[in-house]
Image 1 (tube, rainbow, N blue to C red):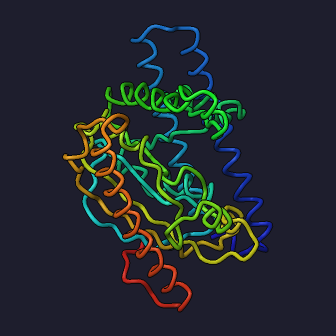
Image 2: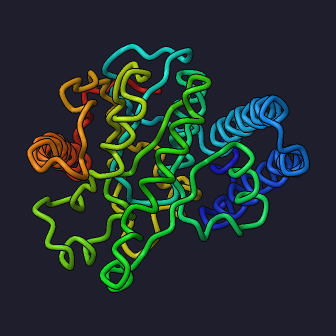
Length: 312
C-alpha cells in the first residue's frame, strides 16, 4: 500500500496520475479502433472492431483494480446478494454521488459481469480520448434539453428515447451490463432541496429511459443489479478526491440482484397512462427502499459500527 508512505494529497495526485496514464494508454488503443470503425462503415468490420475495443476496455478496468490495490489496498465492505454470471446481460441501477461511482463500478464488477456501458451526456463525446473511446464501444450519448427548449419543441422529449432504442438494438448482439443512474445527475443536498425530492439521500428517479431499456432488452436481461454506495463523510472535499487520497478505503456498497419485473417489460410508457403509473410506482418503491438502506449504511458508518458485510 504505497499511499501509506505518502501524505494524502501526494497519494491522491499519484493515484490520479496513474489512472490518467491508464486511460491514455488503453484509451489510445481504443481510439485507433474507433478511427478504423469510422473508416470502415461495414457492419461485420464494425462488430469486430467493437469487440476488440471492449477487450481493451476490460484490460483498462483490470489496470484500475491493480492501481487501487497498489495505492490503497481498499477493504471495501461489499454486501453481495445473488450470484452473477459474466456470460449474461444485466441492467444495473445505482445511486449517483460522484465520478468515483463509475471507476468503482468498473473495479468491483470486473470479471463478474460483462463490461458496463453507460448512458453519457452528449458533451462527453468531445472529451479527448474518453469520448472517442466510448463512441468506439457504442456507448449511447444523450443530449439534455432544458424545460424551456422542450416546451418550445415537444419533439425534443423523444430524442433521448430514440437514442436509448438504438443503443439497445446494438446491445442485443452480445452480453452487456447496461448502467442507468436513475437520478439522472449526481446527488447534492442543494439539488435534493431544489427538486423537492421526497427522499433523504436520493433525488427523484427518472423512469422513462429505464422503461424503454426494459422494453427493448427485458427478455435479454438475467436480472437487475441494484447498487447502493454509502461514502464516508468528506466535509467540503469532493468525493472523487477523497477516494483518490484513500479516504474511502472502507466504503460500504450494497449489491442486490433483483428479478426482472415481467409485468413491466411489455408496455408503452409514453402512451399508456396506466402502465406509466405502475412503472413509476415500482421504481419509487425501489427508491424508497434504497433510501432506507442508505440511511442505515450511513448511520453505521457515523456510529463506527462494523457492518455485517462481506469484505472484498
